[in-house]
Length: 418
Ligand SMILES: Cc1cc2nc3c(=O)[nH]c(=O)nc-3n(C[C@H](O)[C@H](O)[C@H](O)COP(=O)(O)OP(=O)(O)OC[C@H]3O[C@@H](n4cnc5c(N)ncnc54)[C@H](O)[C@@H]3O)c2cc1C
Image (tube, rainbow, N blue to C red; front, top):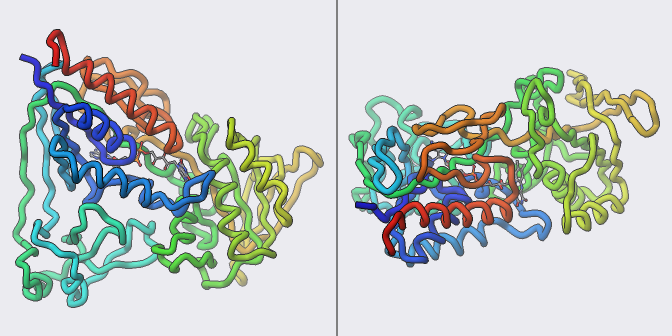
């Protein structure tokens, strides 16, 4: 017997696309997502290049397709523990972690008002705080609060007491669930490369050295500063800023690969700065700018902006003046053939995309490349999609996930007609 249902692991743009495409052809699909919300890293991006539109619009269209399709069931706070069996007939063990808030939640926010405990806000990379009971972010889907139990004060139950909908269940326990499916699409995506490993750039030591993903949150209206780009150390406005490309990418000591999106992400982020600070001095240190195809127009447009300098040369070191928090970037300008040392208010490291599978492998027979990206699944019926295979932008992730949906459909069709 071939089971015709499909499991999608990871509810980012790749997983959502694979799930929706397969479900809209008529297949039963389960999504397993470890966060309390769907959408993945795209939810943390301020604007999409090159059109500079807000990603939440595109996500909302996908959420609407999910809501209106009875073929899709999704589980948040969930992770796959084990996969046994073979193509057409996999038994999957899924762990459901407790959210401590049930389906009755109306997101009224009364629980957060009375909650006495705070935690670092991981959605904003720790730049601000939320209450222990919180919405993961403003546009979270499903719209439901979540409790970070590690942050709760012992014995406190104020959130449960104030909730008139009986939505808070402080005694919720982890559960295990079994699924039988014919095929698996693995789409667990990426994580920012750990910038602390680049000790010569001082991330973590110098507060005004940030990363590109943090810049997305600083520029976002629902971010820690309400969208105002300011220095983390003292909240000062920006008069000068440097972007350092390939921070840890294309480097045999760190990520071997090119993350493909960082050049476009930086060019986009210069427009965030330009919009808020038309007179700010912006400097981009690069090895080469990779803006392929139609993205070249965006590169040319940014290049022609005033006050933007592109310096061909890899930045070697950043030094901080402890009195002012200002940063000096040491680099070799390859075109002028000289060493430079320029001072800036703030520096953004364009750190690359490391695969989620570098830390958490797929519980199946799979080979990985030197950075941990899925090289080629050897288990028939298990297909990878999106940035878990290689760094991709959203358009390419969607294409790749659509192809993975087709592969999954072929797996579950087996010898039989659907
Ligand atoms: C600074 C920066 C800016 C960017 N800006 C743009 C842009 O403007 N335009 C553009 O097109 N692209 C941009 N990108 C690229 C974009 O972020 C990716 O293309 C996109 O996130 C890929 O989606 P994905 O679903 O493959 O991975 P992800 O977004 O990482 O989604 C993976 C999902 O899987 C979940 N997951 C992980 N592990 C597990 C597990 N074990 N079990 C269950 N679930 C799991 C995660 O929680 C997540 O929800 C940018 C990237 C960077 C670094």
